[in-house]
Length: 182
Length: 214
Image (cartoon, rainbow over all chains, first blue to last red; front, side):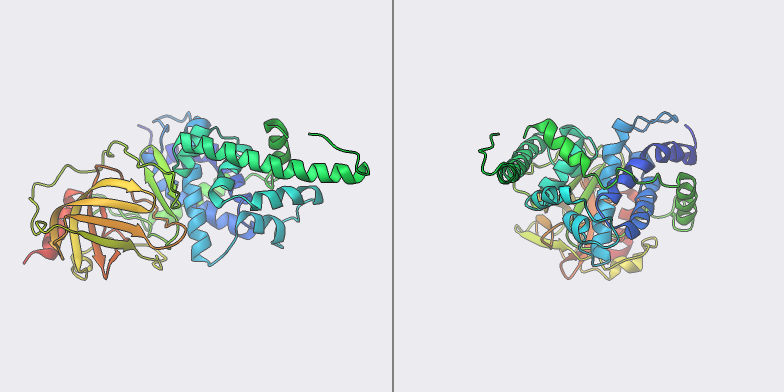
């Protein structure tokens, strides 16, 4: 077996970027580094528990990432509570001064995301931003794959309806009540 | 709006689309060096854990699974095989656990920021509740254990451990699995989380025996 440090380095070189982006998407910029560091400490300590991480230096991102996202998710929850922050995703996206203000054309999307429950929103974002399939989302969130599929379907439908309606309204205004169709 | 259109819309709003890559070398160095002075001495006591931080989110990390508990009603009990670190059922027989009933505990708000030192007998002696039990069910925020041996404060045959907040508790590093055996201590109804409660191991059981004998 390779020494622990070598295995850890192989893991980090694969997951640090994706986990970093996971955090950038969910907390304000000045907290990202701390939570990333905390996540890495947990991975280091639990290197033997990482599913899909063999003894070699070949690391398959698809195998290890869901578990690592799950650890990051836990560290994120810790950080939010420990620091008394309320950095819910949409607050971060829309109100936090340290973040780039969202482009105007994303405001509706953020508003629609805000209508979802926190877990449903996480499921949708893991699908859209992290590009995970339901089975991997299940590994991150602890839901069953079936529950993920149901939540994802429901959340996508809700988002599509909300955004579609907005589009209708916008189109209607532009077209002077031109009777938009979906 | 179909799935593809929604996905494109979401991706266009990805806050990390132009995020820089983290400095991996620095991260590696910082992680390993930071952890060096907090790692337990090999062979001494039980594994040291990160303290649980705060009631709210309970992330239960298992050998193949990490899951967050948010009190969702559609969550199913998880029944993974016990991890290799989980010991077998203790040889001790149930002691005071002849009384029926359910003891209800909570996982306290983890104001225990910082690192945990190795568990000592004196830490355990402060606890008013101590037992070894087997997890029979994990459902939502509720973990149910069947007591196999009472060390202190016994009576109930079943113990329910519940997170005490609306959201979730994060208890990093603690593997709760159905059928796994755990040594649990609590004070005033709150489970201790800084290594005093852990998957059953011969080392920790030995500490329990020392702490609660006589």
